[in-house]
Image 1 (cartoon, one colour):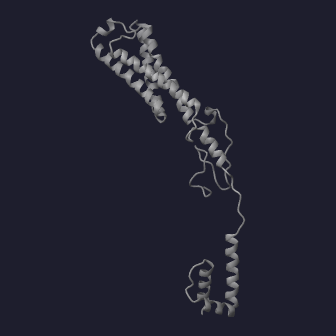
Image 2 (cartoon, rainbow, N blue to C red):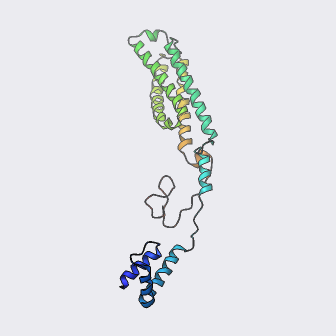
Length: 238
């Protein structure tokens, strides 16, 4: 038997695989060939060293992961009390805004001058205002139920608040709007502030959540992610 065949059979024996030749022939060659005997002894020692090497201690992240998950309301059954209060407040503000829209739809002026509604095209503008009031209120109620949509609500409410503030200032200066009508727009401003707080609470770090977390220990050879402080999937240690 050639040494190459014997060593191939011995390699299969070490790995627990079927030997390509009868074991008796392999053992006979092994007893007569010191080169194969030395090769076999070295292969067995190397395999045993790989399979039985000491276990390298690794960081235990279980407690840290559970702590952060609970703090962020990810774990079922655990909710952030501040998020729940902001959601409730946003829902109430949205309901008030819807009520203002319904009041306009019912013909209640909500602080508008009666003669102002008689101008040409005023009826259409009144209908658009009603639609906007209802749409904003429905949007706030929806975001209170589905907090993941709060990020999209902020720019809409912000843009509306900024533009309407200019018109309110002009109309008040020209006495085209009552103070009561101007005050009704504060509902949207309140909704904007609550939506911003809710978004920061949902997406912010420990400083917004009021909980300080210890930095996660990073194994040697790995680097922290740029935005999420977790191991990059491209790192060799990830």
